[in-house]
Image (cartoon, rainbow, N blue to C red; front, side):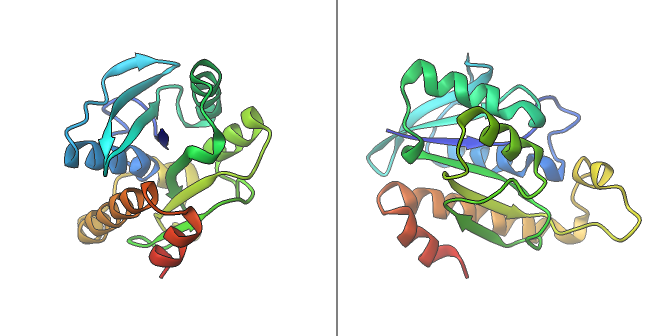
Length: 186
């Protein structure tokens, strides 16, 4: 069984914000495979199904971004889920809009959701897909930027990035993550 955690903030006011690209990617993947992410468990909304013949659980923590690790830990403990079967999908300021970067370890890099996951799991070694949101113009507050929506001129890049993320996630279910990185880190 594989488990994919998309990071974001719950509630309609955050739905289309840059910080919620992890949720957007999971929703798109769920839509591709007729998975409903509606079960409320472990401080998260969860959907289960089969993708490419692999039992897969899609998880959207409902704890708000900064406490994402609480939900992930609750799921791990309850289901005895293995960190090796985890992929975390989230927004990244240091990757340009439209691009994705796959990694299997690293620091939080200032991302509070990842910081919370590292804190609650005690490791920086887990598979991740970072979805680019670029950095704001100088003088623009980071918090306002990540909680802002994508401008119209970035819609096409956003759509392509979500597609690429779904393709990488599907590929990763039947291939080692190292190979997935080689395939999708362009």
